[in-house]
Length: 435
Image 1 (cartoon, rainbow, N blue to C red):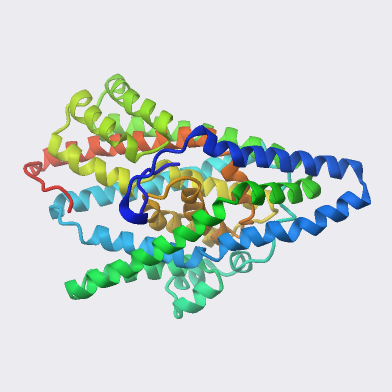
Image 2 (cartoon, rainbow, N blue to C red):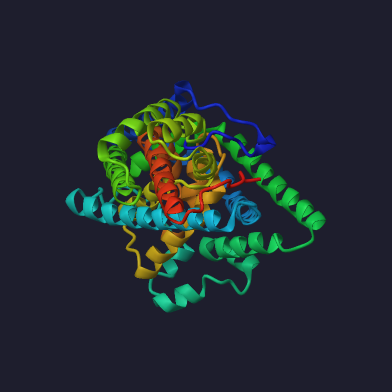
């Protein structure tokens, strides 16, 4: 998907082939078609058979859910620790981090606003995900005042928050834990980091094992939803694909604006330079696989300082997912809307905060795992049904092309801004590469 290097073993994962995405997509189509046929027939025996296999789909989904808490904690804590320990020059590191945060904040806010606008123009079928909706900590907190929700972001009992599925306090604790880990003795820090990363690798091994059964799990989930919602679920999936591509194109246009206004690069100049990396991104669906093309475009096409390009772009490709964060927010809002869930103002704040903090933790996750790790915490925070994610994974091949192009374009745009600001501050000389 959006990332090419696997955390497990530190080896690079190959971009997903078209055949890899075909199995879940065919399973989705078969499950929906079977559900439509059984629903249309009204045959009691077939309905009873479908009800009998329903627990198998729930069992598969629960196998994914059980990894969520330790996976997100270990990914975020280890990623924060790595970033906090980088030995880049303070001015450059602070500037890059600030630009990443600003772009992500704009992207997530834009994603939520665009989703609201598009849903007002083209509402999702109101019954599409009603069957999957259930009570959740996020839904129960919808009526809690905003101030109380913000106070609750710092958990009194992190273990209790994790047990109750409260992802926002868990992510905040993981950030604090990761930063604190850089302050302990080096030998103990190395041991702790190795342990945390081992937990992440173990959870990912479970996730990959469960996802090997994705065609069967997706078939059963699609069958269940089709029986309840009929053609509404197929309409919603097609609607989300179209809207996601539209929103990402808007995000790409914004990145061109950033390069022009804040980076000082002409419209045509930036568009020509970015075209090569965008083409590689569309072909590989991997930001990290596009990194050599981005560096070449930054140094040759845009004429940026090689030291700045070789410092900023690797950090951007590995810890800055502009379009991923943007679309994750809109996806959870779509799912919540289709399940009949209205979000309180505090939940929007929590969703944006989680998206910003988990963005750096999903680096290097190959395949469908990145969607699960990036979007599942947002779904939990919104009270949206997590059972929709496997169906979205099955149809994500087309949006993934646009999302990766958006990530790559944002990486280049931010690099032009870094180069311009460092030139103005006369601080561009001899920045050491990140450790």
